[in-house]
Image (cartoon, rainbow, N blue to C red):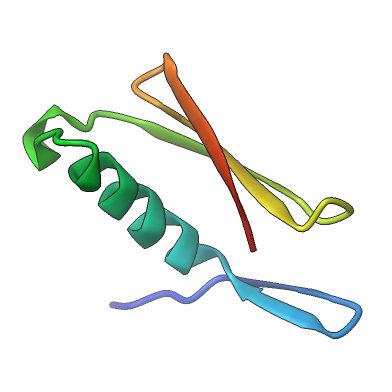
Length: 65
């Protein structure tokens, strides 16, 4: 089963599933191994149009949506 979760705000339609994919790619691009990725906490701030994340409880970052 495949689930697509999206947030609609004003004219924007943001697919939350894409956040996870992008964060996993950021992790790999940083020279990390996929097997070392244990948790991802994702926070989407609509008013800032940004996605914030915490990987494994201590690696933080953000990107514009």
